[in-house]
Amino acid sequence: MSAVRGEFSSRLGFVLAASGSAVGLGNIWGFPTQAASNGGGAFLLVYLLLTFLLAYPALMAELVIGRFAKANSVTAIRKLSSSSSTHSFASLTGYGGLATASLVLTFYAVVAGWMLANLLAAIARIAGQQDLTVWLSTNSLERDILSAAVFVLLTISIICAGVVKGIERWSTRLMPSLLIILVSLAAYVMTLEGAGEGLRAYLIPDFSAILDPDLIVSAMGQSFFSLSIGAGSMLIYGSYISKQSNLPRMGLAVAMIDVGIAVLAGLLILPAIYVAQANGVAIFDNAGGLVGGPAMIFSILPNLFESMGVAGNFVAVAFFALMTIAALTSSISMLEVPVSYAVEYHRMPRVRATWLIAGSIFVVSVLIILNSDWLLDLVVTIVTQYMQPLVALAYLLFVGWIWRRDQLLQELKSGCPDLENGWFWRLWPFYVRFICPLGILVIFLQSIL
Ligand code: PHE
Image (cartoon, rainbow, N blue to C red; front, side, top):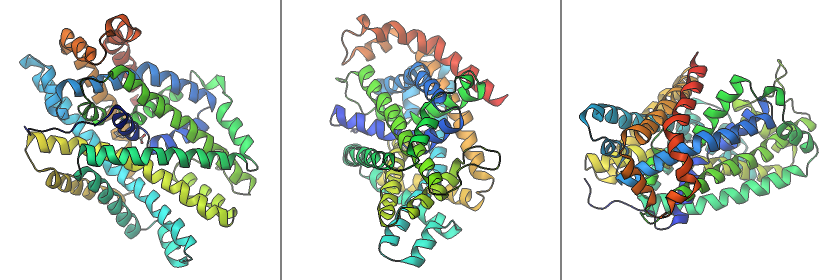
């Protein structure tokens, strides 16, 4: 085991790093499109409810395991089980988290690469480089592989620098920039013709959709992915929090920032799509549904930017910079999971571990690019619909059923001495024992049947 582990230097450092992990393509792209195609405000309501009822308690489970063990995600889970009967389950859960984080990164790097390429395309357009602009903004094997490679290199450079000088430093720089860009873009788009209609589509709930099982399954998947749950990322960030910090409060701050940014992103994306419609861009497909997915980001929005003239070039730079930043603060939290394991468990030097693991992940990303017509969706489905919920469920079983309760209480009380008298201790243990595992199980079964 390595002698010195990193630790976030301040509470703010942790909150920004963990919300950087949470706020990603899932918030800025996934949430608004899901909301638009699932009953607008109805999806928003169910999403908010599920985030606080299921995802926040699950987030707390990961944070408290991490801070108790102060170790990588495999060692951490093993520390919770005292009997040999649960030891193999602990290993399975630990390695399951490791595999999940790594697999999320394989497809995340591909999609983030597209964002990066479009950011560079927007800059090339301003510089008058016509051919380069076209090359960068058009899908091709070379472009996709190269841009995913550059994105992975950025992730590597931050992770190599360690917890404080890499993760914390870059999260505290990038998260405020992200917020400023998002708020400015949303404010600007709101002034354009058509924005009001987008707002209505986003915010007015279609209550008839609220009990639709598909809506509930999508909202849960969205809230789990968005809070980075079931991949060990929050566990490992939890392991870098000081023992003096108030965990329930910091977890709540992260959940609120995550939800806040998702809601804000909806105030940008939906109005933008309807502004595009007002400018003559088709935004509904043949079946009458709103165009979501890649077409929305890489065709509808760029068409909108083009129709805005010179200002549109700068809006495009801001928009794709926003996406790239959001993706980067998330991808570092994925790579840290296997890297911390290799460093602590196999005593590998951090830089070597980072290059080796990120290199292997990149090889899978290239395979995904080479077979993007079927492999991309498959990996996304396997990871988000199966692996994340199952790993999250296993973490909850450890906290609710296997871990000694006096140890759990003691860990939570560190930094929060009057825990026993507050709402958190009255509700949360019951939640992690019964409500959350059951909720995840029901929704998981619903999604696979
Ligand atoms: N939360 C990130 C997003 O919303 C994705 C993520 C998943 C990050 C799992 C880390 C681990 O895009």
